[in-house]
Length: 210
Length: 210
DNA sequence: GTCGTTATTGACTAATTGGTCAAATAGATT
DNA sequence: AATCTATTTGACCAATTAGTCAATAACGAC
Image 1 (spheres, chains in turn cyan, purple, brown, orange):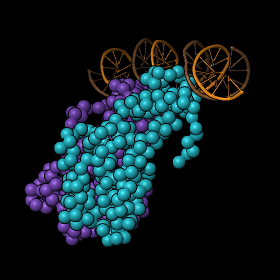
Image 2: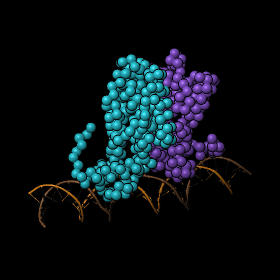
Image 3: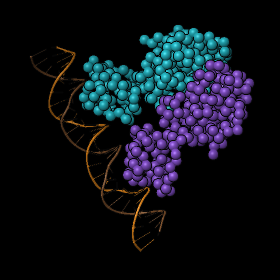
Image 4: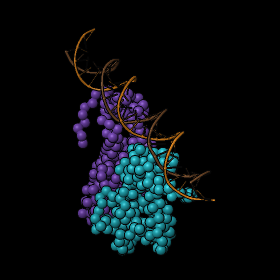
């Protein structure tokens, strides 16, 4: 990560206001359709301040994207902190992603939009997932095809689930069901035995997000 | 579909030039970042002609998106024309999608971009897929969880595969392997027995696209 | 309080952009 | 060839927009 330069409180507030405003606007339209004037108006700061904090619009968009990505990444890492079993860690990642989509639909929309249609590059689940999958294959918990294609497979599913949730805005009950079903399909596809997959899916209550 | 109004040859050429130019530009950046001036310059027509054919930029983008979507939809329908077994039809859809991404990466990029991050809405595979999945569940070919979540699951995978292919640009051999692996994971997840899934994956040679 | 540093401000400019329209042109019909 | 219609053309306009900068205000150190 880039060294977090120490920021004066005043400066930090302005920056935060800009980013918050950018968030709100990015929920509805892509960055290229958002004039800087709109951002600063919403943030309640002067236009000059924008360029005081960001080189240009693209840098601004990147900063926002990075922020959400990091947010989800942190949640996943924290949730999986104590868990050893790689299969449970893999499932846990999807649970966090889905729960995030449920409780933070706006942030999720921005996240998905910022990803563009990229899967492999810098996905918030990517970091740990790859090693978890390899470990699981190594331990004979997943079918061998998952070694190379498991990452693509799982990230694709997570992305689809998130997209679906922010579109449908399901009730808590519908959410539970959808997550459980996708977990069963997904885990079984990876090679987890049906019984175990069903068990894991059943245990996955909606995670609490701080 | 909208009634294809008969078009004068001259008019048709201009329109085609505009759409072709739009395609090229949409490969690299989203519609909001593309000035109409750039489109007409690339198309080699006057600016006025643009508005002669499209009400505004958004209509233009929609026209292009519709065109690719229809293109893939047609390919899938044609490829599945003679096939009865729903599981084979489902797998065939993914094969077409993947092959399209391999042979038409630019068009695929535009397609994926135009979808935004939407899964369920108007996906080129969506139309037939839903009924195929229901039929397959009915016939006991898929696990029951696939009835509700199978569509989301499969579309997510197709999207992920397409994205991956245009990013990686795999060799023919790598492509074959990737498609086969994802088919095995995907089909098994849906509830297809391993042996059958492996068989189908093996049989799926790259489809020829007209 | 005074001074020096740092961040904010908003009026301003230059360039871009979406969209219009009257004139020109190509094609068809007679 | 003459006439009529459909289409193209590109100069033009009004509005928007990215980015600048000198003046101003906030803050911290002493």
